[in-house]
Image 1 (cartoon, rainbow, N blue to C red):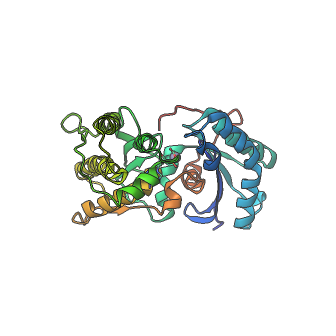
Image 2: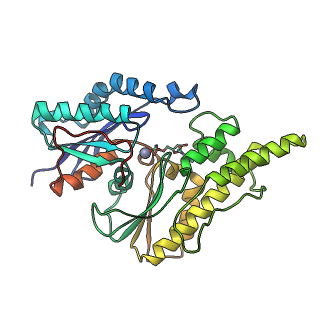
Image 3: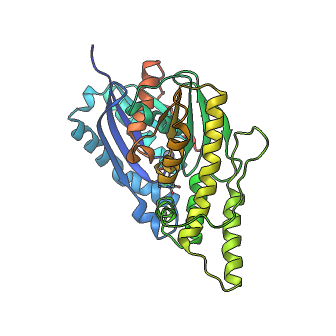
Length: 335
Ligand code: KG4
Ligand code: ZN
């Protein structure tokens, strides 16, 4: 059999990324040019700046991905590109690069949903066993996604306000930590104690939805009140308390959904999946449930990358899904 080579392209936010994947699971290259240093001084991602960096980097990053994989464009069977959701000006750079290459070399185009990409990062470490449940926790998303088969995504719960990563970044900003704050809170939390009494948003009985804006406000109010009283709460303890609340809710709902839906696997996905506290809590929670396999990708496959887009694109390619030359970018796209 001839092998399947898919080039993946990802530019939805602040990483310009390209990767080559063989047969849907083997990473031949995975290049990520991060813009974090440029956005840091503004305390968050500046959309216009992101687009410009993508334009500067995209050709180089794609060339590097092909070189590292030791393949030529003429060897590529399909070009998988993130169509949304994300920043429209950022997405368009990847979409247009993919379209130009697809047109010039007569290669099929495969549009990929960014969240499908995060979920399929797991296919790069193991064979997926359905039905499965994915906990997607990123800067823009917090979702529990049930999958009965490849390409079938059913959102059974989602955040009603802030995404988990967004809450991490906002709390980090309150603690005057650099952007993106998630990894900093994670590190501080490991040195602190969860001494603050912060809320857990369980929502309605049986609900798989999430809410993090109340928790974020509670942290801000607690810090403000302490300051008024002239007290100082150690950042380590604030981080540990905030993180304990986030992790407890994410873990409880994931375990409950996994049992109710009788899944074979639980996949962790998205940037917040890099969180050490969350990884440990899920491992401990699923350890007694031997019938459910918990899959946790390595850190570089949790945060934005193009290998995950190529992995999802490989499945779509084999299902015969193709994009047309008038393909657009969709900033607010449902999975
Ligand atoms: O998936 P991702 O790279 O981009 C989006 O699609 O949003 O996720 C980025 C988010 C940021 O909010 C960042 O603070 C968070 O993931 N993050 C973390 C950790 N590493 C990244 N949050 C908590 N703990 C971490 N170790
Ligand atoms: Zn992402």
